[in-house]
Length: 174
Image 1 (cartoon, rainbow, N blue to C red):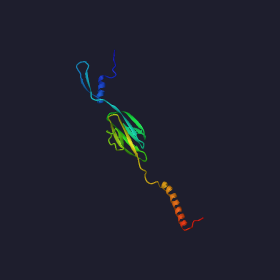
Image 2 (tube, rainbow, N blue to C red):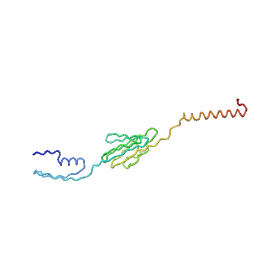
Image 3 (cartoon, rainbow, N blue to C red):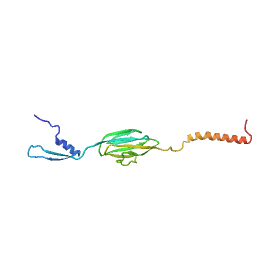
Image 4 (cartoon, one colour):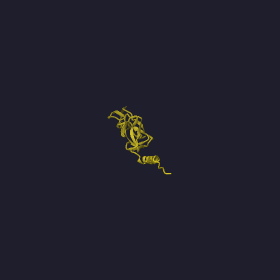
């Protein structure tokens, strides 16, 4: 009977060593056909985490992980799942017109700069971050609105003063 091996324990162990998940110690007797002894010691675990990214009203967030972009719109929340531990995710907060980026809030301990619109977060756990945006004060004067309010007031005031002056001199048309 012939047994076909899909993969051997040594090939699995070699893969785990390459991934850095185990260290190995192999002893074998090369003079005979005896089986080799394989000792496997775990050196770490491969963990994956979720990153929840939100944006307040007034702007959006572009998150980039391994060349893949995720766009989170104003007031929305997205979860990026299964991020390997230690992975850096690029975050860019993009304010809408009449808004400015304020800061990142939430689990900001591993964000490079929580006050910068363009930054990165090192994912070493399950995190939740939010881009916070503030409204800008109005820029300049709206002269059309101001003139629309002031012109009738000025015209009415002029008419009132002219009539008052004429009444004082007895020249009110009848």
